[in-house]
Image (cartoon, rainbow, N blue to C red; front, side, top):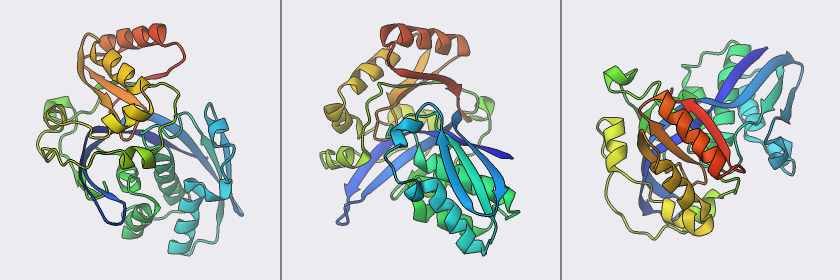
Length: 285
């Protein structure tokens, strides 16, 4: 059995620069990734199959499993590399659905990595990047699961150097994720953007750039899910917090902390104040 993690994706900042005639938006963002996420287990089989379990499996119960991004990723790999073998795939859905932290994109990326190992395919082959881009704008970033600056639709990536805090990176920084258990669909949030270009996102040191930046999707997301404002305010008021913001198009919000003790104390505060919310203590990759 081969195990992979669909690492939760965090947008440390997200600037919307323009709305295209095709309905897509030009954005600038800083991607970072949590150590934790959905789980994916893959074993050899004579055909492709997907089983979904875990805490948030029920949220996908009405979805046609054949259209799931994980199976679409697997079929694309079979076709691109002329693979005749199959795979039995089990998705442990641990992250809330429609929550702004990657979800299906992270799962598809995990499937690509797992199947490359199962079928002895070279991950460096450019066909994997092409498949990821075809599956969705966030999938290339999720495939790498490394801190990156991105523009275009979020699919033009520049990997940011520096492993670990001493090198100016973010690896190991304590991270708290919270979600009010309210789905926040991406389409309506982007359509709610007011169309004002508030300026570029810095391309320098990622934390400094994020602190100087913003998430332009927060206002339209809050209009749809007012609990997001409560989450950002609650996280931002905790001792030791370095950055608190909504991720992606919401409704998950995150906070970075200067130490594990501060993160743990903040998590306890959130669980007491909002016992019905999802709350995950983790760290950045």
